[in-house]
Length: 101
Image (cartoon, rainbow, N blue to C red):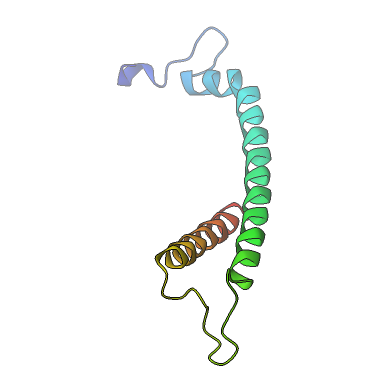
């Protein structure tokens, strides 16, 4: 649109911006409603994931050594992979909860 046409009015007395806003009001309302529903769903899923991940971290696989209190599988690569992925999942889920809150 040419700069000179920005303030021009049509036969109904509306500028291009006013006409666009009027024509797309329903679309904006629908998009806003969809975004709220999507954010609620994402927050619910993130909360469920964070709960499960926290429970997995609280009950360590293999248990702990009664004398030292350290995990039995601490020196195993698979346990380290589990611990790191569990921590990343918890951080990601917590971040998503905070973003959608």
